[in-house]
Length: 255
Length: 375
Image 1 (cartoon, chains in turn orange, cyan):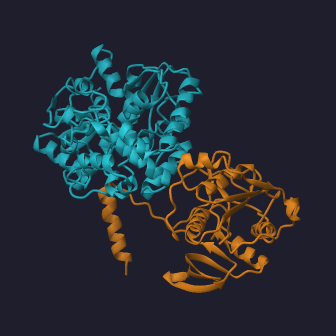
Image 2: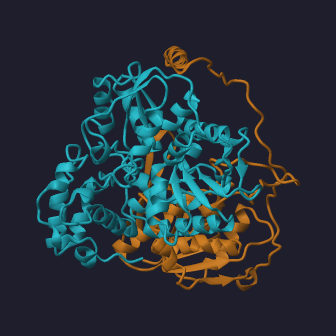
Image 3: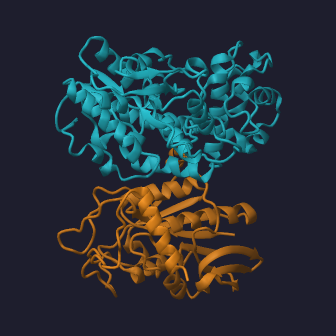
């Protein structure tokens, strides 16, 4: 079973103070740390688990700047065999990302292509499903369980309201992986340092028949902080008083 | 880095074990987990397949307090055996998810909780503390992760700054440039990350031409003093500094703290680094303070369970926490204050006082807080 996993390097913003760039089109990133997108981390781990079960190889791909090599190294330490970095275009959207990945993947033979459900930074959730469409492959999104049965994949996917759907797909197929599908292992610094010795393929967009200036369907016009809402109530007093007030509110509102 | 279980016997002196059981007898988690140090040494010595040993959750129960190693009459390196086994697990990625997150956070953000690096020195914002790099000083106050980010322990950092400013001690902090010392990281088994942290921190210390380092945490103190390679700068725990200041008459405590106070010796300050006198020399002269000693003190101090990565590896233990036992001991002794000199002791004991419902009978304070109140 040969598996491709598409991954992305994203800035960690959960605890960070965020500022908007002067042009108003992005956040400032020079004070942030970058990491492998959380959903992709589950996808790579899932690929490694499937490889252990069914054999084959795992290839990781990313579209990104030189610095993206650090997430590919991490993926190699997680059990991937091959890594490919495609130089990023000048600007991009979900559709173009899918197009680039489709061009890179289409002439290679994979049984399964995995992506994360979405990226932590822009959160479009488009790339996986658009990629499936472009490659003409069946797909399932928000996948929480995978079993392989010969030429078919049996997958469970998450629906609204805690309901799960079971699907059977003919391979090759594209699956977008939900967090929680497995328990990602710790990737030790020693393993990462060892993986740095492994080869990594790097190509430019021209190599796959594209240019750095591909037209976009969607461009970011403006980013801004959401206006402060008026519904929040700040409870005042000692911790004991605040807890009493809070329990009263919960009691009142629970029905 | 490769860890080879075949070298364990030699590396950790397992062949000199006489199976006397003193290690197990002194272990502070022996009633709380299946961890039996005597048996573990024997099993590691005889096993042909160490992978079986690795599956035991109790490997994460050890607090690395080092009572076993310090008491061993033969010289077995029990704690290093635990660290060695955890190192294999770390290399295999098979660590509890909370430990995994602590490692990743430390690698990315320089602290195990994953708090934002730029906010590391927020606690010191309005205190007029020098930030090295912006201003110069020959003495560094190395703050550490818990004293930087934990709101309870930030009080200790602030108290210490107040004391140092009162005696005109010229010092600076590293601000957001400071990274975790790695003491707990090594004990949880991430030896390579520990080495990286040591290398990065040492490069910073060298860059600022430091002549002396003072630590707030006894864990950072231990790492710098005993485990950093080529550490040429003298390191002191803050209790040593304050004890000196009192002795030479530079720091005077005039306000009375009319209270019965006992003291929890932190394992990494007390039994592992033999700093027993200084904390007592600080507490005793506080006017009105009646110092009472617990039975289990100094070398026999009862571990609070906060060390060795236990802050990030809950589980693998059952029954009453050591902190609760300790708080009850202190209350039974008639103490109204239990003082300590370690962020982890402070947090575990304060949690224990809350869980036991004894917060109206005893308060947990760091020595720095008491001194700052008595100035």
